[in-house]
Length: 231
Image (cartoon, rainbow, N blue to C red; front, side):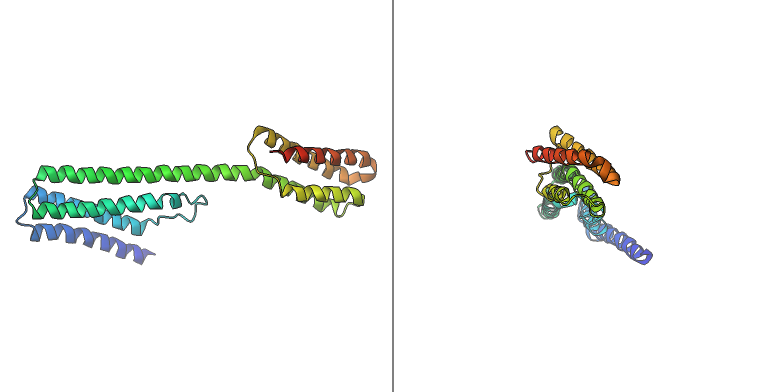
């Protein structure tokens, strides 16, 4: 890793050195201000290339992968602005465009590049927002699935009446078909279902004494699940 960083640093330094040395050695006929401007512009373009090599567009450590929503705008704006900047620099040399017009033109292209970068960042933020909302939406359903799975795990060895065990198994299966929702009513029902399932698990420790309460709780779970399907 250290060797790769060394060669990368060496490549960057040599790239800048070649650009600056080339303009100073071969651009003697250019006006000094134009020569400095062209050298700076070339270094900026080269920097964009190095940034693509150093910083990967997609960060695999982030689950949202917001960069995917940014890639199109980012690459298009970067390519267009860099090509336009190089072409305008070449036209300035060929047609001897006055320094002030060259400076304004390059500043305009830099402004467009920054605008493109800003657009990519906004696009990335939107992707993150959508991802966070989807994750929050699925959280309630995932919690319900876990609660019902834990309940059925306890039921399997508790000696519950077969009819009641089948009803609970049907309830567990029905959780798969619930639509994730962030509506307050749906979230409230999710919490009630989890609490009722937790009560049933507690009562399984003494089925004979809690048979009536278990029956009532199973009936309540069925009612809550039926209501929850409406969201």
